[in-house]
Length: 146
Image (cartoon, rainbow, N blue to C red; front, side):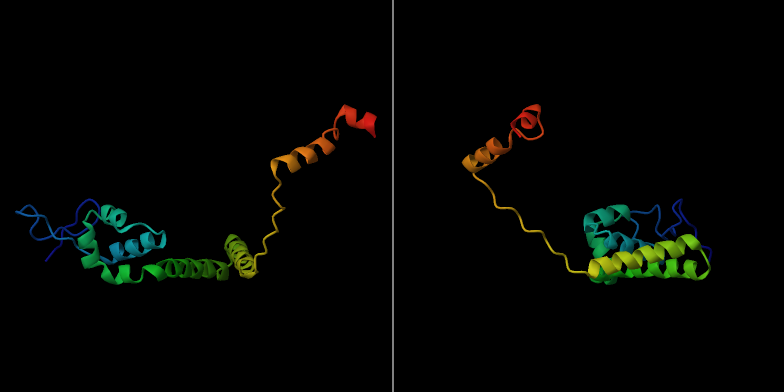
């Protein structure tokens, strides 16, 4: 039995052209696409629109992928890092450089971030007094007063 495909490469359902909306066909490629879109934190409505289906159909056919929403970004990053490492092992100098940059960025992210203390906020009168004492600096008058 030969399966026909539409312009986007999806298999054409058996009831195509008959009454009612054709059923959504979940493919491995669409499952990968759902995981990738979840990694970019797309909403269910936006993902459903990209797959040309309704949100209930999305939840029905891709419930496993949607369940792993929290780990989708980690899975995509891990896959990309693996591909980058394979390129680096093959001798690709650009991949080696990018891999080292990722390692450096990871090391910087692990360091504790220390915020500089904020200077105390001055009221209107204190700010005006400070500005009056330093108004002559960096002007021609400042040279004459010094």
